[in-house]
Length: 122
Image (cartoon, rainbow, N blue to C red; front, side):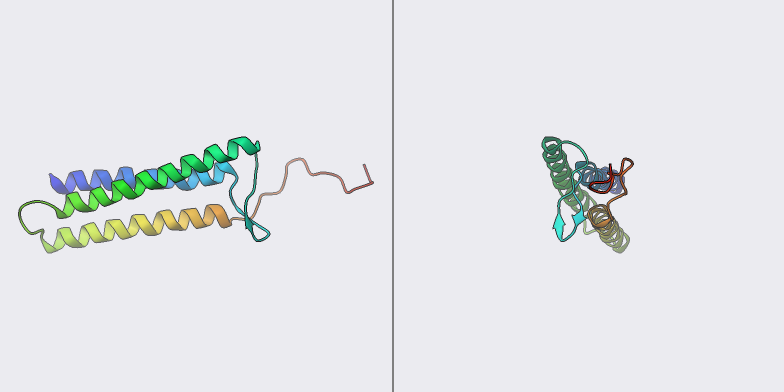
């Protein structure tokens, strides 16, 4: 039962981390000419999205730590399979969420659907 609960916590944690990476994209945060700032929508809405992203990542870390502790906890020493499973699941979640955050922030800005004409030619 402990392992099932730990795996469910891991799944919820990983989904929360993926949402955190997604919120960075929705907030318009991205690498743009040496700065990490791109705004797709209104300036005031970008801060809210970054706040949701940070909150989701904090929840992800908390649930991931809880998952690891639940799987490893108990009165008896965990078996080798449980130790390996908890370490692998934790590593997979960390690597996956970090890669998604890097891709979200580092992905090139998409071209505009409404390009502006060159200056003095409109």
